Amino acid sequence: MVTTQPFIASTSWSEVVHDAAFWTRLAETLLPDYVNTCRWFAGKARLQTGFKVQTIHSLQLPDGDVSYLLILEASYADGISEHYLLPLSFIADHIALALSFQVADIPEKGRIGDVTLGGYTGIVIDAIYDDRFRQVLFSAIYHHQTLSQTDGQLVFYRGKGLEEGDTRLTSTVLPVDSSNSAMIFGDKYFLKLYRKLFEETNPEVDMVAFLTDESNFTNIPAFGGSIIWQRNDRPDVTLGMMQRMVQNDKDSWMQTGDYLNDFLYGVPNRMFAIREDVFDKVELLGRRTGELHCALYKPNRPNVLTNDAFAPEPFTDEYRQFLIQRFENLLERRYALLIDNYTKLDSQAQRLAWVFMEAKEMIETFINDFRTRPLDSLRIRIHGDYHLGQVLATENDFVIIDFEGEPESSIRERKIKHSPLKDVAGMIRSYHYAVSAKLFNSAETEGIEPEHLQRVSDRWFYLIRDTFLDAYLDTFGAPHPLFKNNTEINFLLLIYLLEKAVYELGYEISYRPSWVKIPLKGIIDVVREIEKIRLSDGNPTPDVPMLQTGLLQTQRT
Image (cartoon, rainbow, N blue to C red; front, side):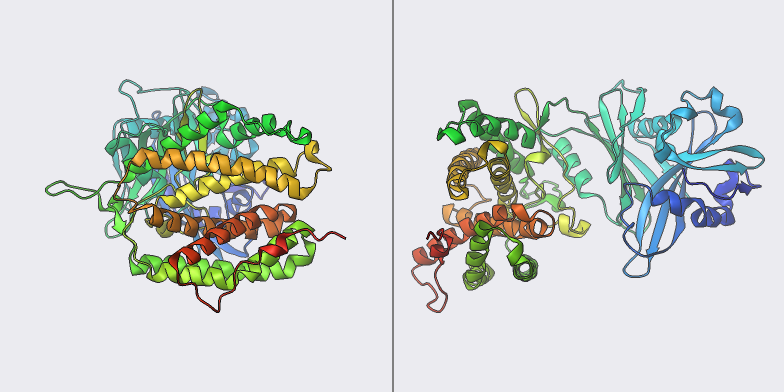
């Protein structure tokens, strides 16, 4: 808690909702220092010009007290302002002992400041640490309440995942710092408050609610409910979502790492062995991924009311242009980064980087082919940020989590429909990272030639990739409207694999130069397949050079 000058106001806590001067002073004194200590505040690195309490929602507590949900505006010297959700409670000293929780147990990150309001001293806290506030949120969702506010209304939706009879459960705050805040109810439900707000419904809520309420797909934490701020003639704003908790051992990244440990021990002895249950798990994840996409495929049917937000769409010129423009901008930035950092790379990464840069014209031709190539496959809503870390491993199955989409994309972009092969590409890249990171960064493989490690890594990866992809496609059967044929599947998968690997390249150059070879190898693998398409199409562009694979050979003296 930050020490400031004494904060004293004559207005009582129950009446401050009407005291504009109080909120202005709070936003100028206590809140700036506090908010800048919070993990969920994304504006720490920007030059801030101030905070403003834009909107105040009131929630009556069971004992007659009140908590407030603030919509806090953060302004900056450059760029647009941001909006954050900050729930507040005031714990007066004279009532603290009568509460069901101990003020002393509130962590420092939940303490905003000592104040005196209406003659009563006490502390203003983040209301998530107030048991009364947590119970009001849960009860409102359970009873599907709508609470009128001075600016619109708060609508508490109840989903199928919230069981009848769970009217009151003990609750705690999950002690994890992240971009959102999480509360646990009865070790059964997980309520997430979204801190950074957008003037649209959160894509995660849309996806989880749709899958729970309108499909038979059960390998997600079931949708328990949501908190939505509604106003006339303005987009709805998602404030929170409740889901069922999932008992799990670890995420699939950690599970795959365990499998790779077994594989790793044989590598120094020139032994190549993958346990059969590894293939079983990979096949199962491929099927679950296919089942997820089947559940998200909801074509319009005559005389049946459908959700247009989830109706499949074709590959329109508008979508192609969106993807191409993003891709081309990404490529230019990555080429520039590689050139500026080339001398910092190890010799293996340098050779891969050189082949990538020499393949620039071939990649550009491939992108132009995407602009005009006839495509009859369809696009749907997808996970959008799919990798091994987004899949929880239960005892005998998998549960897919975190449907918020790409963190760096806008909310509108996260709702754009893509081929489900974009998710498939994300998982394939994740498997490639898992084996590459393990083999190239382990004590057991020190001293082994990088070229040999690359060959071993490739063999493991190709087997796992093909196992996953075969199980995934078998889930759909053939033909399926989402995929016209194998030719389109291969072409689209290469588009998304290339986009993903090029995206990864920027992070590795900037933060982990020793890992740059991982996305570069992924890019080269895709470019090899692009070259095969050029040759099979029978009309390769004569002025576009072939892939310079000879550059990958180690120069020996």
